[in-house]
Length: 290
Image (cartoon, rainbow, N blue to C red; front, side, top):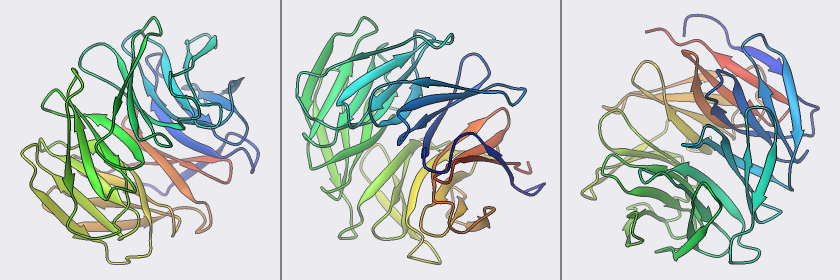
């Protein structure tokens, strides 16, 4: 890393910044899971907050130029425009606990219903279709390089896959109680994911080959991950207050955040740097040497 990590306060210490997304307006958008809000930090550092439904959790840019997010406690899927107009939609399954959300290759948003073991698809006009997940507690999800959606099955100890017409499959992980959470498409054409229970980073090819990389400290509780501007995978170490880095050939390093008790959650690439959400009310900016 070229410079020390810089920390920016965006909320009170109990608001719980959780996930982040790069907005189409050049701003950084984030969820405040305990304050029931969506935050926006513009390129000048000005922060605005919009109140939404209970428990906004994951957030992603949609194909319609808006940000879409899950409301875990309200059991709804939310949408917010660049001018702060918020709306939400209720999935057919009540109390489903929507968690992960990502744009699909079909022009719709896809999301997980962790509490109901279902995968949802929502069109830009709010029509929702649900499909049974191939395992327990589907969590984060991402669009894969093969045109399907891939997701972690946190309590199923597997990685799931769903095609845009609803066909599902699952790939069991070699390590028991691995508890996969975060997932992203890597720069090498594979899916990369965190194993919060096992202290490992996993890699899955689209034909189902799993490789696991044990972290030097197995108690760090890796959580979210993303591809960095340097072509490596970067992940948050929730249990140690650090960010980790793994190259596509498996070399691992870790970097301290300002406080070991900051509880980092989401991480995203934004304007050439990495940003992560800290439970203590801040966002951390990490410069990456290329």
